[in-house]
Amino acid sequence: MDVELKKIHSVDLLMLKETIKIFEEHNLEYFLIGGTLLGAIRHKGFIPWDDDLDIGVPRASYNVFIKKYAKELPNRYRLQNYNTKSGSKYYISRIQDLNVQVKERRGADLSTEYASIDLFPIDGTPNGKVRRNFFVNKVMFWRMIASFSQSKNIDLNRKRNIFEKLLVYIARILPFDSLLDTRKIYNRIDILLSKYSMENSQVVGSLMGAYRKKELFSGEYVKRLTKVTFEDTEAYAPYEWDKYLKHMYGNYMKIPNRDEIERKRHFEIVRKNKESF
Image 1 (tube, rainbow, N blue to C red):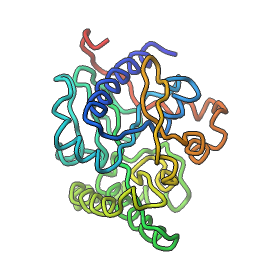
Image 2 (image 1 turned 120 degrees about the vertical axis):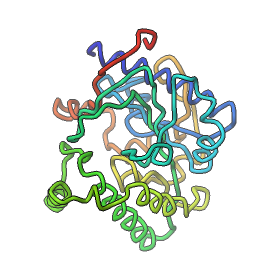
Image 3 (image 1 turned 60 degrees about the horizontal axis):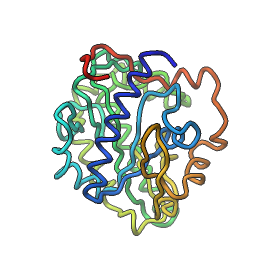
Image 4 (image 1 turned 90 degrees about the vertical axis):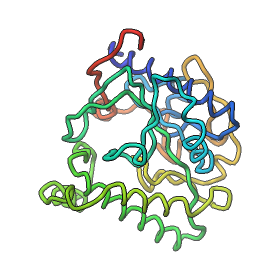
């Protein structure tokens, strides 16, 4: 592992510890998801070549944390989402370390940000396949419109089918950025996603995650939670983590090839304060 990646891991791990400490002190639910959970199970911590950290938060706990307890984060951290910062790229919330400035390696936007970990609101969906598919496609439509509204941030390295490539091309040559209001679009998505509770839904997840529809999974996977080891700490995970990881990755214990490993790098450090490490 290179030195820079080790530094990002150390910064992210500290943010994870401080964040879950607040969640657990106030009895708010959370659980590791995506590559972070995969890393916990396969590597007992970070995936060695990955540099981000994802936490799933049931909508009720997500809203309470943002409104009441995010202010308890240490001074070097701040919570950012589309409501806290005009022009924010993402719908989800990020906890940022203001001592460590980074640049994203994806997309055409060369602006800098801060080292961060991601909080994904976990929502329910309609029961019944037909209603659920209609709902999911509606969210995907508005997600596409949100991408059009900030076309310079589209990840050009993501694998896409011909239709998606055509849409990306159109988005990048037409002036959608100046015609569409990203914040209003995210507000519309937020209302849609908040409509169905996890407790009453057979299928739950975060449709604003990187894998889109695949981010939906059986609500049974998270009816109960369990603690797993992540580096030198422990964090909550779905009790049915094996089923969740098979749903997301298939044979999740298989190490990916070199190209897939390289695509997992998201950030490079631009500036840091000495006390950050």
